[in-house]
Every structure is written in structure tokens, then in C-alpha cells.
Image 1 (cartoon, rainbow, N blue to C red):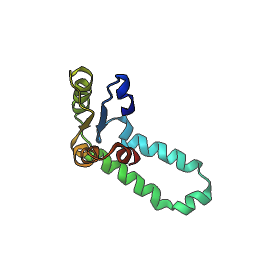
Image 2: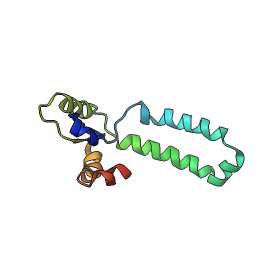
Image 3: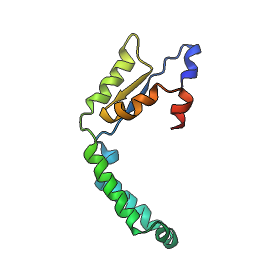
Image 4: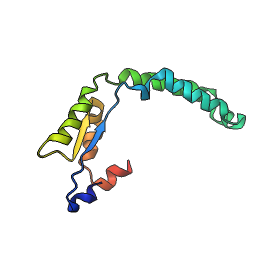
Length: 115
């Protein structure tokens, strides 16, 4: 990404946190996960245990509750990255991104790309 800078290419990394979109809708996600679970061999299901499916369903509900419904935070940073005269190299959208991803953005790129 940023190795393109010598060629005049400006790259801005947008790192959104959790937002309520169809990607994290618990009903859709759990339904798809159950369909995949049912296609697994019985021995694989047994090695994970039935509690794995229940734990996954609970975690998707928690993620959905903690996520923000204000998508304008993401579109706002996208607009700034595209239209600003001097765009930043990294943008964090959402409170969770600011708490977790923003501190990582000050680390070397090789470290943040590895996480």
C-alpha cells in the first residue's frame, strides 16, 4: 500500500470499528453459521462441542449490541480521505477503532499489518 508513495500514489487506510450493517446482523450470521455447522462431519462437530455453536451465537449478539448504528462516521472519514488537500495516512472510525486500532497505527507498518 504505502510502498506506492514514491510513484505519486497517496494511500489512506480507513480502519472502521464495529458498525451495525448486514455483515454483523446476528440472525443472518448465526443462520449461515448453523448451515455450515450442519455440513461439518459429525466428528468435527463433536471435537468442537455443541457449546461452541451457542458461544458463537452469543458473541455475535454481543458484537451487534456494542456496535454503532451511526455509519456517517465511516462515510465522513472516507470523504475526508478522498477530498482533502492533505489527507491523513490512517483514519479510525468509531470509538472501538480509536481505542484499539488507533494506538496500533503509531506502530511500524510491518507490525500493524501482521495483527
